[in-house]
Length: 244
Image (tube, rainbow, N blue to C red; front, side, top):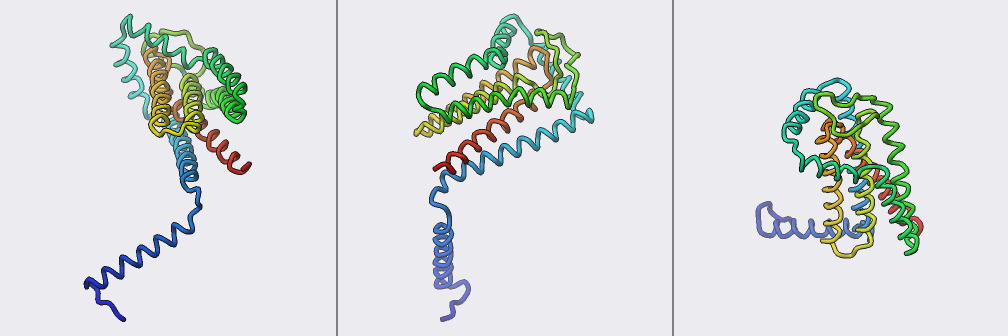
């Protein structure tokens, strides 16, 4: 029986065909799709962060954002004050290697005592890789530190990307994602991830406030931290799925 276009029968027939097609597609999808989608999203964000970082490094090498970097640092320096300086000097310590090493050791020991061996290994690998990435990238780009504002902290290494940003974002993001994986409540998972990003953003802001990094430095560091952290966590989830 032929159904005329535009008739109620045709619309009903079209809805039935769409419904059947949807049912067939859902039947072909893996039953654990809810577990696959976060992995795909994480891998996509990691890849995107890496590509944006490479593009940012290219722009820096060509000197296209030097004026913007200087302008932002000058604007921030004009708003310095005793209270803010104390605050950001304290915040920047959250991204220092001595503090993060102590935190990592403490968490890994606690996780081992709780028999969370995979969490321990994943966090340890992420934190061991962060300084290696930092040294490698700094040696590649070899960017000088800012000179347009006085430094409130003594620094000696290259400027791009920010090691504090890489370290803090890697640590807090990896830890938040690992803990969130053991947390059934969605609100708590969202809070952990958002809170980790806020801490990373504060550390990044502290480096600009202290005058030791350009905005593009901390942006690049954050991108590397996100890409590295997500890569390690996604790999952990994939290996866990294979082990099962």
